[in-house]
Amino acid sequence: MRKSGSNFRTIWQKPDDRETVQIIDQRRLPHEYVVQDLRTWRDGAVAISDMLVRGAPLIGATAAWSLYLAALEGRNTSDQSAFVAEAAEALGATRPTAVNLRWAIGRMRSVIDSADRGLDLVSLLETEARDICDEDIEISRGIGEHGLKLIEQIAATKQGEPVNILTHCNAGSLATINYGTATAPVYFAHAKGINVHVWVDETRPRNQGSQLTAWELAENGVPHTLIVDNAGGHLMQHGLVDICITGTDRTTRTGDVANKIGTYLKALAAHDNNVPFYVALPSTTIDWTISDGLRDIPIEERDPEEVRSIYGRHGSELCSVDTVASTTNISNIAFDVTPARYVTGLITEHGICAASEEGLVSLFPSQAPRKE
Ligand code: MRU
Image 1 (tube, rainbow, N blue to C red):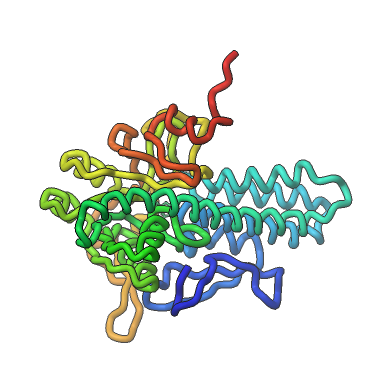
Image 2: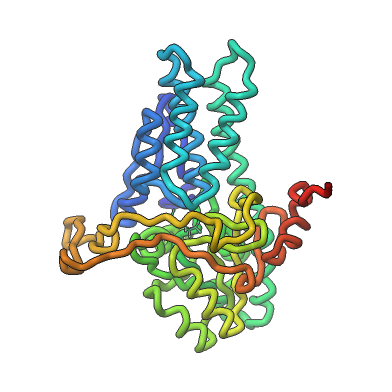
């Protein structure tokens, strides 16, 4: 992640105190850059549920580091493994839609389960959490390299005019450890000198587009324009979008895609206007156990207060203001599912494939259903 010209990760161990994990409090961006200490697994759980960190891969990584913190705390209990297992249970319930949470906890638990008695659980979980983060960076790099080819193909038809990419929510560096998923191809194209321009959906109610994606694109020097969530269809009708690339929080083995609420409407508009609609995802976001996204993906409903109020700067003060009457009934559905038929392709670290079981299995053959 770029900040003031330097490269950072989104989660790391405090340099002079490896028993503290540090994150960026993403609720405060773009107005303030605040680093937050996580000292206990409960700090990690709150960081996930209150969205100091968010984005499927970073949620998984935060849960992994939280279990390392649980192992540290559990040293003083009669049963360290049981203490960590309880923390894993509670962390698993913090956010329901992003499957990376379950994946990362499962991976940490298998380390605990296979550890020989007497081995130092703290250092085993520390290594595993660090590996999860290192691997996530390599995965984003792979997504970037494969997605770059799509942008290059479009650029070849545009005689130097910008390639216009529309994205929704934040599937950027801030949602991962570095590079992002949907933004990785954009950063790779920009670094290669390709003229790119990003339409950034504001993404109400938490404004991950205006507060996070716009911020990180600016830090990377990528030209971009913020739009309200309802503008994408109009832009597509007028030929102003060459490609949509979004991220996902959970994708079924058949290619149905859960992502931030409003993604489905963008996919419908893209379909109606023959605009390619791609979803960028790490393999850790594929839920191989389910096949019907509408039926099987749990959709998170969040606090209505997120819709009622809006956070920002007023003069020199940062504050929230209510935008509706206190009596207004509010629903805050956080994700929707885009059926595979509206997804042109999936960009993964192994390559690009059709949004279908055959497509995904062609890139991840070990996941092919077993023949009896
Ligand atoms: O609620 P959030 O901010 O955690 O949701 C994240 C998203 O929906 C992003 O769009 C993203 O694509 C998934 S993470 C790369």
